[in-house]
Image (tube, rainbow, N blue to C red; front, side, top):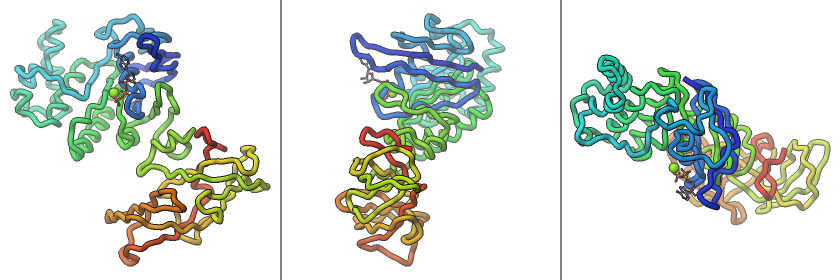
Length: 360
Ligand SMILES: Nc1ncnc2c1ncn2[C@@H]1O[C@H](COP(=O)(O)OP(=O)(O)OP(=O)(O)O)[C@@H](O)[C@H]1O
Ligand SMILES: [Mg+2]
C-alpha cells in the first residue's frame, strides 16, 4: 500500500505539450478516478505513473520515493488495460502465475497467491480453461487477477470495462468496488464514463485538455463544481445551461433574467460584482426543477419529447429556442402535453461567467 503524489508533472511530445503541470495527492488506500473527454490526457498521466511513458518535467512520488527514474517493474504498481492481453495458449491458472514464474518467485508462494486471487474473483472453476473459452467479463476478471497476484502497492486501471456490454459493466463496476474494499490498496482508475467515476471514486480528478480542472469527492463535485466544464461533466443527464443577463443587484443578491424569456427572473445570493447587462450562464440540473409555484421563479417550456422510464421521466423541451432537459417524477395522470410549467429555486442553480468560471 502506498500514497502517491504528482508534482508539476509535464508531458511533451516534441514541441507539443499535452500535460501542463499536474499536481495531485493520492492518499494510501484511496480510490481515485481520472475522468475527462477523449484525448484529455488520462491514459498519458496513468502511463507516466506506471513508468510506461517518460515524464518531461516534474516529479512522481510513490510511497515516499521519487520514481522518475525507477523502472516500471520496480515501482510496485500493477496495471489493467481495456484489452485483456491474456496469453491465448495458456490456461487461466498459467496466465495468473506467469509473471511470478518469470520473476523466479518461489513455487509455493506463487500457488498461494494464485489461489487467493482466484478466490477473490470467484474464478476457481475456470482455472483450467483457455482465454477463448471465457466470456468477456471472465477474461477481464483474469486480467485483474494477474494484477492482484503481484500484490502491488498501487493498482492502475485504464478503462478496464469499456469492452464489456452495459449489464456486465455495471456488475464488474460493483466487483471492482468490492475488490477495493477487500484489498484496501490504493487504486487509480481511468474512465470517460461519469457514472463509473461517481460510483467508484473516493476522489475524482476531472481533466480537460491536459489540465486538472477540479479534484474532489463525487458529491462535492456534484454540489459545488468549480466551473461550467465540471458542472456539465458530473451528473446525468447533463446540467442545463441557459443564457442569462444580469439585471440588478440589491441586498438579497444578484438579479438575472433568462435571455430566452426575460420574464423569468431570479435573485441569487451571490457577491460577485457584475454590472447590469453582463452575459452570464445559469446552470440548472434536470432534477432540480420544481413544481410550478413552489420555487422562486416559474417558467413554461414547450415539450418536444417525453421519455417515461417508470420511476421518472425526462422531458426534452425548449424555452425560446434554447433546449433543456427536465426530470420529473413519473406521473400516470397527466399524460403527454405540449407545454410544461416548472419552477426554479435560486439555491438549486449555479451561475457562470462568459469564460465558464463559477460566480459565487
Ligand atoms: N505518442 C504520441 N505523440 C503525440 N501525441 C500523443 C502521443 N500519444 C498521445 N498523444 C496525444 O496526447 C493527448 C492525450 O492522449 P491520451 O491517450 O492520454 O488521452 P485519453 O484522455 O486517455 O483519451 P481516451 O479517452 O480517448 O483514451 C491526445 O491529444 C493524444 O493525441
Ligand atoms: Mg485513454
